[in-house]
Length: 247
Length: 320
Ligand SMILES: Cc1cc2nc3c(=O)[nH]c(=O)nc-3n(C[C@H](O)[C@H](O)[C@H](O)COP(=O)(O)OP(=O)(O)OC[C@H]3O[C@@H](n4cnc5c(N)ncnc54)[C@H](O)[C@@H]3O)c2cc1C
Image (tube, rainbow over all chains, first blue to last red; front, side, top):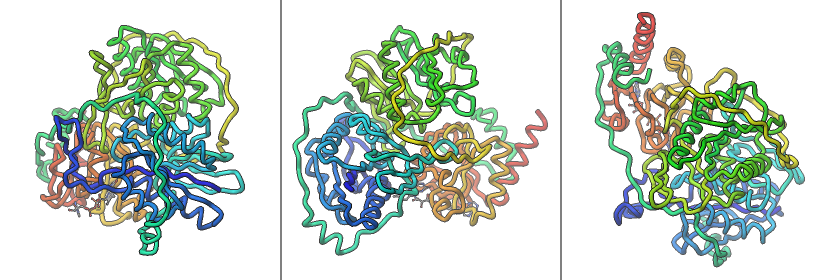
């Protein structure tokens, strides 16, 4: 079996977000970069578990970005995966990113393509669904459980207020979330091995951006908290009713 | 024409889709075109009532199998309908189904796509939409450069704007492709309000000390007709089910009222809830960071404050 795992680089979850150059660029000062948590904790680790069960499995990681993403892809390789592909283009447009990955996927004839449920920077939750549409493959979103038997995957996915089980014949694109696997910490052997694993750099296919980020803005600061004493719950109810008008 | 994809479940149209319709009507007005709805599958919901949110027509492809989410099939059907109806903007609610379908529809229509939109578009010199980024820590303004646009709008960012109007329901035919997935089981927590659709959310953290203490929170939620949520360590310790976990790595929600009980307000937690209209924080530590993000705060012991709040709400209901 061949698995393609999509990896994205995002700011650490504790990062304080600020912008520069007239609010057109993220201020990268002091920002720690990490593997997008959904890509790392869920899709990559589940792929590694599948390989542990069936050693004939090959795992390829793919990322779209300039050379600055290489430390992140090496970090991912330290957890597992056989080789990585970096497509040498930087874009915030999901159509461009998905098109590049779909091209890699087409050539590699993968049985399984995993993405995280979304990235924690652009939160578009779009790459998996777009890759599937570009390749005309089935897509299952928000998977929290995944098993495989022959050429059939059994996938549990989140629905509003519950869970649904889907059966799909491979190949399939799956977006992964909590429940798929447990976070792992890379060990020394993994970190050493990652240094020598192949990292192929490919040039992008021609593809026009369909959207452009113009600028950013921080949410308006809260007015300041109004404190209510513990024996004043009637007053809190009044404020929620008459001032905030939310109950 | 602006076409709004309508999600329904349990014989009801989802509130998030009603909101998307209302948003769609406003976009249509900006563009000087009509706002129409697209309903897939069968439902007993009164779909002509989408008129109240501004739809002039409701196109209905009444095929049972479309009630199930098969992204490959349903996105193909939606894209065909959009092409047939000559839609220039196709809208979705940014809910579970919308997140899965909208990107695929965008690909099929060769449309630029923005998800998590939080404002009406600006249509001078382009087509600019503001969306939430960095899990709610910021907004980005995006220009969509393609003739057709696909947008998924955040829940509870625009609201409902009902008018007196009944839409015309038009039956629509469609070629339905062969299914690509088989649904073998559906498990639903009965009678529970889905978190993302709730107007009021009551949420608990590690400050409640253990699952056996959740009674006071559930009583408050019941009194308010609220859904319940929790912080990540709470679901990680299995005090509460995983689907209640909100935050940067859980659900991002934007109810009208979020009541946080015994939650410190870590940056990752705030990312999932800071778009709530009003935030009430109950915490015994006056230095808890959550107070900085709150509208109303009570510094005190949750085990005393929460039952007192529930009683006060009950009392105010009785005197109404
Ligand atoms: C990569 C990453 C991702 C994360 N993602 C998320 C996420 O998505 N969502 C999330 O929630 N967290 C997330 N976290 C964890 C986050 O950093 C915090 O650790 C977590 O939110 C703390 O949960 P808590 O507020 O329930 O517990 P604590 O931080 O332990 O806070 C408990 C609070 O309860 C108060 N308290 C105690 N007793 C009482 C009482 N009797 N009455 C009233 N108040 C009381 C205390 O004063 C304290 O403020 C993430 C962390 C990392 C590293």
